[in-house]
Image (cartoon, rainbow, N blue to C red; front, top):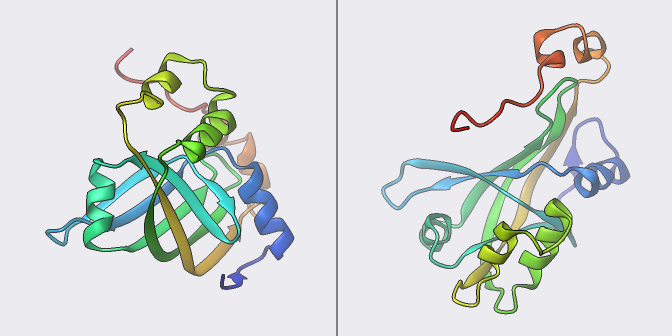
Length: 165
């Protein structure tokens, strides 16, 4: 894995990735050459990001055509900070849904919810997306945005509710 450029040490970089529970934003190309981006749950192990998706999902199909990706993991409220980069995506099987179960534990606290049961259905085939970074960059605007944490609309505004409900 390449070293991360930016203000964080290796330990700070890995601590952020371990503690961050927001999804990884992953960008790639569709077979027609247009751009595609989506958000996926991730874990960071052995220098790579690992995400789970259905084997017949659009992203799995796109990555089978072109494995080049870019990614970002960042906070949504001030002070803004995060990790971004680019790399190569590798699709591996996850027949036992081991990665998916781990991600359900990490993000939902277990596998008992209806959503978890839907994803773990025996008829659903799962794949692991392993993102091997080629370039990594960290940023942290904490020092210059300290007042923005509470004294601005972005700092006071909670995440929006779904417009559907």
